[in-house]
Image (cartoon, rainbow, N blue to C red; front, top):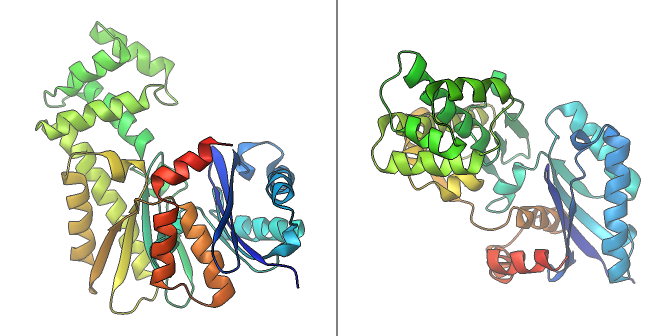
Length: 336
């Protein structure tokens, strides 16, 4: 009998990682390729299928296997936000040749990287709260724009820094060092320059990373306007988690995972403190908070292993986290 494999796919808006392991879970290969999100190309779902197929041809080809040799696969895909999108993505993935699959929005990988069930608060470039309960029921809150309350993530924070600097200069906002910080990052000199910048960049700022870093430094230094940006981000993320939990069915304890760049790099502690306080105040059951420090792609592999064997042992999770540490994973990805 031919050897069987499992596959984990972390498909974001900028890149897709395919992690191939043997059925016993031992690592085989990592392929990093461009995005395969159906929202990234006007070709939509047909383009997504063709792109994923091309990526898999490379991965399978260099390992001497076919998709038929992959016994189970976990897919976390950007753009899997609505039930009809999930259904169409499943149809396209099965058309490639997969049979035993799990597929949801890529936010679910934060949960699967830690536990079989729980809720993940993604606070990265964008934001979403997504959970899976003990019965395997999924729930997504947000991830579809600010009209749904997506007031978190790097893009939002950068826009808030500019907005509140403008508010301080031209409206009734309190004095804040954000004004000088924003002017320094954007290279502005006169108050009217900010008005013109906003007019020319209504879609967002091309200096998001620098604006976020500047705002974090001011928050850590005590600027209350900068602190309120992060406090409100924490509260907003908490509200999404609370909504997920209330619409799902968990046992005595809920695992809440914090995933994404913003959760990992912001030094101002008030954001995470606000998040945890609201979650604990609003939920009746105990909560165990986990900061996701490993790659989300491990969540896809653990999901595939769970589909194949029915569960994932803690020893296997520890083994894979040690082998595919962030440093090792980055090294493998750079070799592509």
